[in-house]
Image (cartoon, rainbow, N blue to C red; front, side, top):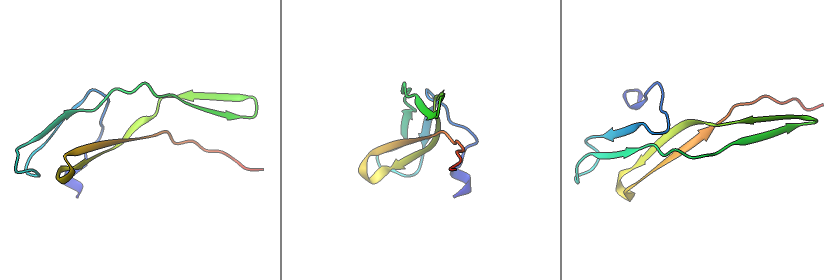
Length: 77
């Protein structure tokens, strides 16, 4: 559903979805979560904050979920 894809979502953004629930619009803020990823490659430590990847809406279950991502490349020798 391309019309339901937004270019960017940040923690703290307000999301409003109309037309998916008989109870009316679904309205919520994307939570701010203090999550850090630490990746260790030998002696090198990389610490990053993951980005919001997906906001899922399950109107029948009356819930939403947020997934995060941090892409990285690693080589196996």
